[in-house]
Length: 228
Image: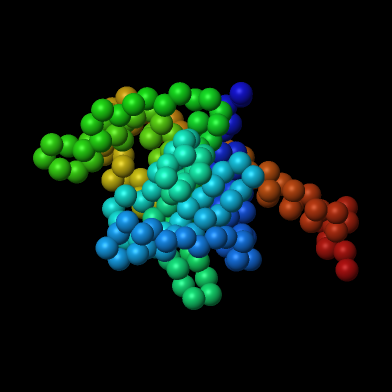
């Protein structure tokens, strides 16, 4: 399968998140209970044609995971996402984590082999750099953080200078902490992703501007005076 550019990947992630949110808003989900905890924990099941999504409001440092085999009551392929917000009339998805796990799902679905992580935790505590530098995790984190920027910055407000964009990106996303764990080689790869992402956004910014300009010029006469 031809590799999609990161904008296309983000758009695909967004469509899945939209479909999930629509099902939640229309109450198209099943409520279950984790009974193995001292205090039972409620979780929701949302079924898409090709993926099962499980959501909890459990507060935990592990946001979620993707798995391609059945596990207990979870039907594969599935993503399990924690740290969602269950309100009386609204369920707010932990979108950053969901975007991350969806990219793992797309990798699996597209036949991209995963590389096993031997040591996720450091002996002295905390997440190991091996985890952050794992190819699959790098793909997922890249989409997660590029999407964060894509969600927060309107196209028309995006800087027209890459250095300004680069600084703006790390101010408006959680990418800075992730970046510090990358090897020098993978930092360069991430910078290349940012350059490609910026170029694609810039293309869109000015193609949209050109369309608006062309539509506006229809209403102008030959002397550039607005027709009323």
